[in-house]
Image (cartoon, rainbow, N blue to C red):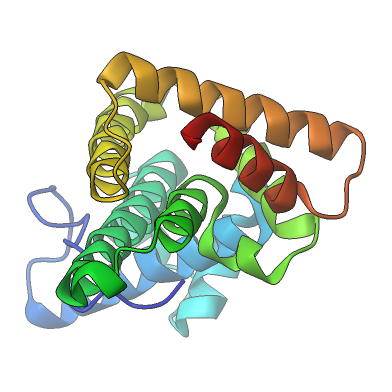
Length: 212
């Protein structure tokens, strides 16, 4: 995922922990970012104390020093990744808007919608990136402690998608957006079940048909 022009808010801000010094904050944030990378690469099972510490280049004990539990680290990793994606999406929409009418190409705005739902790396095609993302989304339901965060970020995502479609000349209500996302998710899941090598292509066709 490309970096947003402004850094996403640190998920460690406003949370209790042992990071009471600038060095401690940097180390804690490095661990969160490392856990986020592992989450994207391997799902929830990839977030293990040793794997996170090694990815961050920090001692193993740092993961238990800066976080009260593995669940706290998982939640912060999910939040960091989600907010980074949202920040990138807002920046990309602003960039397209700055280009004027030339930038507000309906197809490109549609691709931005798919970036936010399927992941930017799904633009490269293939099954694995989308499969990992949907496995992660489904897996969050097995972790009730993530439910408030997932609802909060889901509401922010819906609002951003509505804003994108307004720019594309296809304004939608919240209920209509919920329906559209359900249609896209159903299309993607069906493509994954059938081992379709291009689930993003299937989602694109569904989106274009709905926006006609």
